[in-house]
Image 1 (cartoon, rainbow, N blue to C red):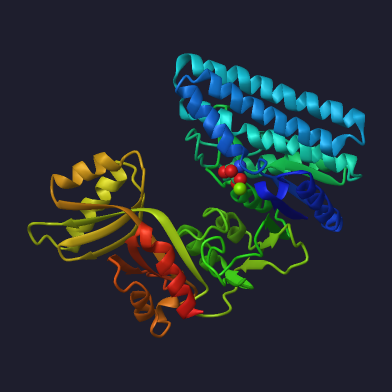
Image 2 (cartoon, protein in one colour):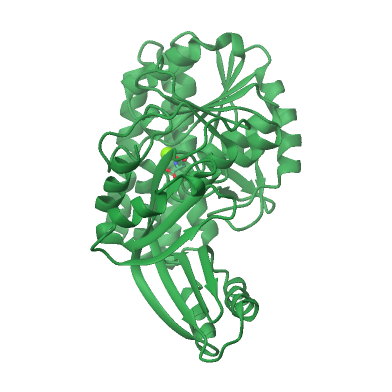
Length: 449
Ligand code: ASP
Ligand code: MG
């Protein structure tokens, strides 16, 4: 069997969903489990609802809820009018989900408090809605399909907005529920992103987490392959929305794909590769707008050496930490990383010399201020905000002749705050001002490809 995951843009409207159905129809022999995201931009609207409710803006909450109701019911009508019975059932299910969301959002609005659990309860609705409609559409278009609730299968901890799945419990559930649901139908369809905590409330696997869900389902079912359907032609040499003349990469290894995702290449959710790697399942990245295009494949093999992609991670703060006394690298690292761990601050890159450590962090982490304060008890700390990391990623890329020169030349005239090479030899990164990052990345892309 195979896993087919369709992202928000692949299910954004009637045409897109019709394309999905025809793609799935072409894969029937492979017994697909289909995973869908929320319709494009719906998760963002749901975040808006949660935040407006917390701010007790009832009018805005209701406007956003109305817009969601309109969008989903009109889409259902457009797709399902060929079968009034399926249409009616689907519209009443969609309305029931939205009624219950409305009650919940009004409750949040009344108390003006939004816990991560309430936030997850709200944002998890998008996938429930989209999946009800896509499943109904499959049935109307002649593919017998059963809707299956991912919240019954993926069990997580209680960090609701970026919940960590219990893979063993999840695998057991998936192995039980999917074959049962597959009886008598040709397709089973479920949701990405959403799960349930061990307490039994809805949780989500972090934004863009549907890829990760797909990989977890694929692992649990020992799928022959995992297909991630998006709106670009596979993994590109840089983000085509920001940089011109990018090209598709045929194959990358699990290691390369993880490094790319970690360093900001927006192809796959960073956690996607791990479940696939465990069972050695190839991950194909495909374009639902041109389904016959070859896309990219991620496997354990590592074919070519050298640069594959230029990734930009543009939500970075850079910290330069120095010690007034010479304390040595060990003590410096220990001090910095203890403080990071205590305050649950995630470090992206780190470099050190005897009395000096440079680290980059994702901006906006809740523990950031406490982290800096703790560091300042022992060290001098310079904080540089609004930075970006540009990384060239590829197998053994650090050995590519002249790469570092090319990167620094492309950044000449700009401030470079830090440079780092990964010990895995998979990436070379520079940290620059966020405002200059896209231009510099474009120049690097041009000279290396
Ligand atoms: N709908 C969720 C989001 O927009 C999950 C996903 O699309 O992967 O983040
Ligand atoms: Mg998405």
